[in-house]
Length: 391
Image 1 (cartoon, rainbow, N blue to C red):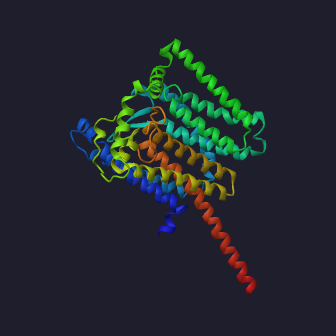
Image 2: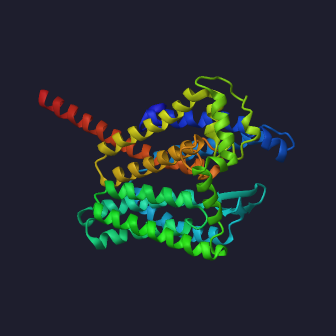
Image 3: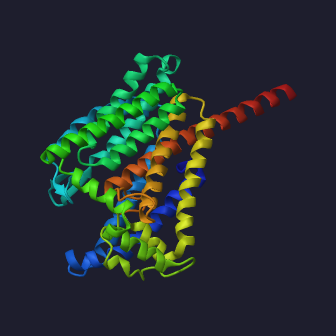
């Protein structure tokens, strides 16, 4: 039964399920205060909500991993075309939450309000698009004209996300640069792109400093950066996160006994890693870090074994973007980076974030499944040839 319906890299399957279980434990623990404030003390509400999210996400992963990964090449173009109007709609009509527009809000009958974070779709669509482009244009990718068409979707996506979500735009830009580098794009072109992007951001920030109404998020970014480099103006969230980590110590086993969840804003999303360390110690936090590193290493192995360029680029792009986001989230929790607002993939509360993480892992498993099937077919062919020779 297992080999028939669940195929692909078994280690990645196990890690994805383990991270989902950690998510349920962390969300149930970190949403206690939120439940008392918004759900009249119904502490099981967010656990049940996350449980439904996990079941749907694993179902999506199962469906995607059973698909032929070659289909993702064309679907990447469709998703890219869909992402652009959704990002524009978010920028114009998205509800303002914590001073930023990151979601689209839908009212569905019987279900109620549903939020959809369009940048999660955009990240996956951009990787799929770039993987297809690099695979098809590999023979001319070092030409300036091909490079222009490779970076154009990156600039469009990041430009639409940048005004309200700087950290996600930077994450997508860095992930795209990494994928372009692996795709044999000339370092000279990548250097020009990086320099131009930095200059463009500085120009936009200068304009925003003169006319703050054009980019209201600039003041928030400035405060976060100042508080990160100035110990006297340390951000409240950072203080509470470091307190949670200090309480965890080296080794601890205290699920559900976090105290900082009552003081730490967004303990169930942006700072869920701090809650995990508080309840399971630095050893528990190290295990989470190790799990993401193993996912990356297994993905690299899959990419090397994949016979097609598209499959290799797709696996590398998805795994690198996901693990890089996880590292950024953890770095913020331990005060190695300024506050970014990035969630921890597979663990933070949020439907779209978890679902697109599952879909991304499903694509990696689809490539792995294809490799396994090819190897099995070759083994059967070899046995048949040997049998025919023997008879």
